[in-house]
Length: 328
Image 1: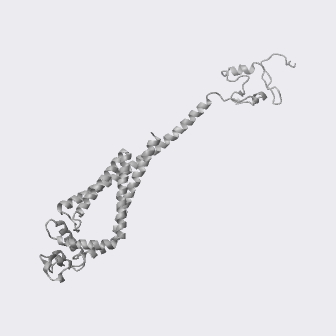
Image 2: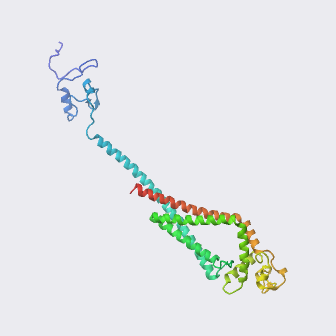
Image 3: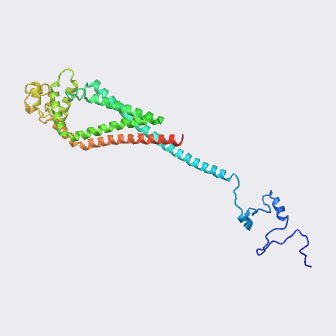
């Protein structure tokens, strides 16, 4: 027997796709939706998490986002930006630490080198007096004094660099950079002036060295005496431009004993055939020209060390400024 459609039953036919009426029987959907906490109602457009197409009236209605969603998006954006800035600060901090310790080691070696130069200068000043004082116009321009002054400056600069690096102090780093830059520019200026005025420097140096010969062997000039004795013995030369330069000093045909081919007491009173004939100024100049490569390498290494120090100082200074700006 065919069941009448008017009979009440708990079972109902599912709507077909061709059906124009998509509504569920009254109370059925409400009963199932109440089982899930009332999340889905008869007027809702989602069924168990799946969205359904809105009806004609719903499409005409204006969509309104749930209240508070815009604040969640805003907080997520802030969190993302905060994480990016935190990562940037972490990378800057790691880079700063690397440069910090590199600069500290560099300046520590710089400072130790200054200590060594200062020690050698003090030793020469104590044991040899004004060693290598060849100029009569500048008696204080000796090898010992030059080493002492150079070692002192290197120690001061290295100390400032070490403290500035380990403390990450912007003032000390900038001071280190400025002092090292001034020294580098002074050295560069001296080298340029030397090559520009080479002829004038040669003439002035020979004239001044000849004046210094008159101080040879006198009281209070042991440094000059030792310097000339060592130069004439090691380079096998005599006088500035000729061995006759000594004749004006002694007012007779005589040279120091260091000019003799075979050293002996008062050998400088013998005939000129037993003396060195080469001029010391030209001999030393030729020696420098022959060793120009070694001199150039030494000068280039010195310049590279200074440029490296300038680079470390300015890089670390910029990193400290950036760290203060981003991570303040």
